[in-house]
Image (cartoon, rainbow, N blue to C red; front, side, top):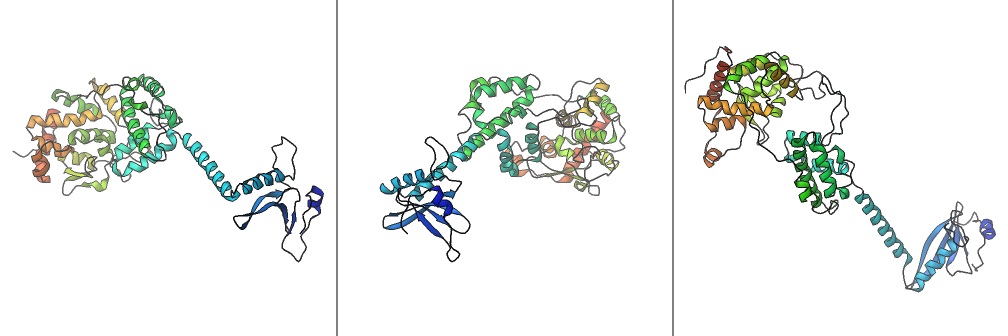
Amino acid sequence: MSRVLLTINRIDKLTCPPDKTQVFLRDSEVPGFGIRCTAKRKTFIFEADLHGKTIRVTIGEYPAWLLDAPKGSTEPNARRRARELRGMIDQGVDPRVQEKLAKAESERQHAEKVRQDVTLADVWPHYVSANAARWSRTHLLAHERLVHRGGEPRVRAKVKVTVPGPLAPLLDARLQDLEADRLAAWVEQENATRPTVTALAFRMLRAFLNWCDEQPEYAQLVPAGAHEAKKVRQKVAKSNAKDDCLQREQLATWFTAVQQLSPVFSAYLQVLLLTGTRREELADLRWSDIDFQWKSLRIADKVESERVIPLTPHVAVLLADLPRINDWVFSSKTAQSGRIQDPRDAHNRALAAANLPNLTLHGLRRSFGTLSEWVECPVGVVAQIQGHKPSATAEKHYRKRPLDLLRMWHTRIETWILQQAGLDDGTQCDEV
């Protein structure tokens, strides 16, 4: 078809005959420029020979693309684009390849922009998911509490809504904005109300940031050395080992106060002392973990997958008397999980009523280990009951005491504690 100067009038009059699928009208001003017309649409095109082959590039659809646009206009200009394509062909450049490269670069820049804007809240779930298989349930819950935004209603508490976790102020911060100054200000702010929890949160945050640097999609986003900076580390509270523990002469007062609590909390706290388990290990106890016939408890151990310990007489009575509301032994009708969540408030009320010094739930675990020395129980027995790692080669490789041997010593410990508390349990320990 002969070439003509493309005009709006000619383009508007161009139609595709019913017996054809398409027709072309080529421009006489810019070689290779033209318009393709079908029954449904008209499209600006550019055709040229490159390296012995004819190539066709679609410029854009008419009238979305203007034939010509005023000078300085940013609207799509088909003839100007055709001149650009003609220049590429004259230089031996394939416009299609150039377009693919430009598109790839645009997508890369967009992806990098998205990557630069990623926040701690965006990445934290991926970090937890990637490590969940090797973490204990307690460790997982700790990571959930760290980033809890707070503000949810609470039941039977002085504070009516949940308090935000220590990492909540950093959740919406971009990883690249977690500079040393910002981290130092965060630690200082959190230290004002909860320095110990903040120290734990900082250690977990540091592990998270190190993990980010090892992942290709997050590498080099965190400012180098930000969490290792001296100005940050100096503000983190030092971890001091606690030594809270029930004394022998405090046992009677403690038991009396605890037994005034609701049955579930009362049983939980007594069993916590008499077994030396970790607070979450005991809270996770299910009815299927108790064997009343063979007197054993299966505990989900944070070190090993699980451990089996004796079900001593007084503990057996406490557990048997609890209501069976659901699968959990220490159940709760108000907690969303179905089991007790935070026994500390109940324990603190009992301590205050008995005028006893502050004692943490972990202090009850420590008390079991300490009080067991009064009956001269072997250290390895106590460690196996409590789920401590063996501290010597002989214990690690050559001592795996059977349940009946553990029961003999465990019953003796329980009986002694109850005697000091002035409780007549009706049981007698075996002579060793």
